[in-house]
Image (cartoon, rainbow, N blue to C red; front, side, top):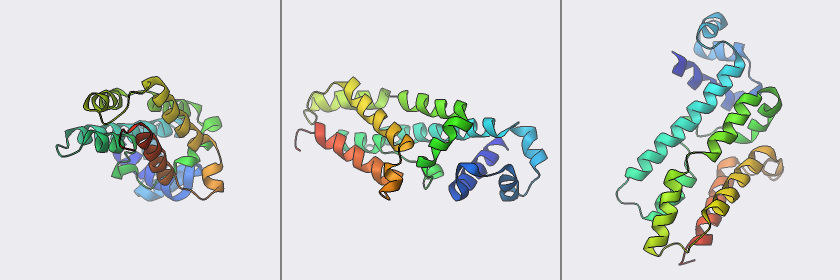
Length: 185
């Protein structure tokens, strides 16, 4: 039931942004707010659960990418860095900044999750250097550029001001990073 509520909350978030109400969620689920509150005690917890659900889905997608036998190291890294599972596709991640003041726990969790789980990426970077498809790169700097770019996407207004959606920005960032370290670029 909790997963059903979180998935519905993500749908309502997709439609209304971070300012959706628990009434909106209850209507989407066809249940009372009271029932929701027996499972998820408040909106702060709901946002934290939504963040965890999203990043858990991303990690599952990364694991699937790592199992794809026909991908080159370059393509595998490109997919890992730009992964967006179907469950969370279409979410406007730029609205997450509004969560910073109202839901700081969820926002901090976002930052923590972005900064963790780099094992596959680091392994692919090292593998690419060994294969000769990537030039040697300082992994700490690579990680910092990626993380700080994502944070800027979430915190800044540039994407919205320039009518660039989050996924287009993410794919452009990944292209810049991969093409920047590729030997054949």
